[in-house]
Image (cartoon, rainbow, N blue to C red):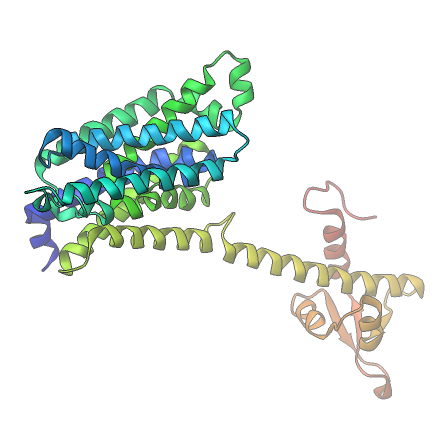
Length: 380
């Protein structure tokens, strides 16, 4: 199927719109979760939403998405409050409290799901699809529900941006300013729960945490500014949603949710590898450049020291002497410095091997290396 046919398909357009809404919302809210070192909280909230889905079905008596999402949101918020209570009232660390809440709520959810599936007529409801997501089941009416939830979440973040920023980076200072830190903390966690609920039908309980964590991790590699991280995470989340939904529509039989997560993983892997300041490849290149710079400086310093020691500006040092002075082989470094016009080979007695001499350009380069890039004056 070509792109024009995909763009005209009602189901594809609905899924792409839903995936874009989810990507933007989870990207922005996941930024706060990651920066607050609460990446596991998204996983816990996603698993904790399962009993709420089952309860929503039991209360509504049918597979009505607003009821299911309301139940999921209530269940996820209850799990978040339980985590906060365990951390504040006991000696449990945050990761242990999150693990306990995740296990408890997911176990209850599986039991309730088994009970619901055993009821007459409930088997056709397809509640088990919330475990791994079923994007193709999204209807236009479901899209409106998702759009309202996303709008409420993003508008809340925009309205409380400064407060959330303070609570995220310096809660002690925020408390000193008189801000209700605990209330803001709960509000931010509740908004993360909204993002989790948005993704349950698309990517499911199991993979939802990736939608929160991966865009923020990828965006964090490119910038340090909170607003830019949030915007970039939203863009990465939206782009991954579009890519995953489009590939899934073009290759029949492939689930949309895992493809969205794979696209996110690809963006994250590329960011971890190639982001200019934090990427692994640029960091390796910087380390290599620094290592070569130290070798250049060592060789130039050795030549300069030897000619000063012999009080001869044209003194030429033998290669073996340079190796012994700097403590490592200097052949490759000398050839590099020769190509850059900093040293030159000189004729000497045949039985004494190659000799090397420091040039004026090499002395100037050594001065620059010794005083660093910000020094105002030349080396005397």
